[in-house]
Picture (cartoon, rainbow, N blue to C red):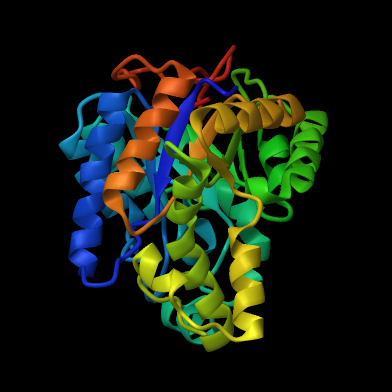
Length: 353
């Protein structure tokens, strides 16, 4: 069983509820996560994606941090190829200055998922290939070692310690290892692939300046309920939304599970829907505990980042509460100055690790 738990919330919109409400739901969920004892609460970056309200993660992170007191707050992640590293450093410098000791900087290498979005962002699909270079530049802005622009400084970020995490997609595990940074990898439906990425990361890990150790965060959907059927129904709205997007090219707001279950689906839709339901960790507390113990044994993960989205907010909050009890969480964690990273990893060193 993985005992350190965190949450990534994507600010999914729900049928009959506005995008602003989705953002307010995210902030409310962060308060609950803090009360339950989760270590971190992260938000995501999506541009022009119907059904997702979270397009400005550092802005939303500021709202979350302002509404909480202890839990660590961060991004899962800021998609670095969409931005200039200097600007990202400045944004996290402001966050860390306002909420010292509580900010995490999760970074990914994805770009906008359509040509139109990429053009609007002034980016190209090939910009993802520059992620490792951009990552090094960003870290240099924080610790003052960047030399490409010697007359420029990232105020107020320079000199601050903001822990950085690399979200693994493709080359992400190797990049995290070479940079000596913590790895975030998912999803848990492909546990063999996750285990391979983790093994590569540990094998190739090179400590960063100041000393660091490998730290692995596995992420995925987890649904806990009184019965297996109730837990499975939590997965239904997101599964249908994904199937819909694959057949119609639009990612819609989440619908109530009972509406989805009453739909007449084409054979292709049914196949996509069932595939989207498969492989997630769900069930009673005993079933979920057993599956998470298997994940822990397979990956040796230090932390679990839960990414569950569903229409029924009451069921979602109940699931997070049950999961917290399973892990033995005992109230607020994420105390200022604590990252949850083990060993010499953490706030030591010039790069926030």
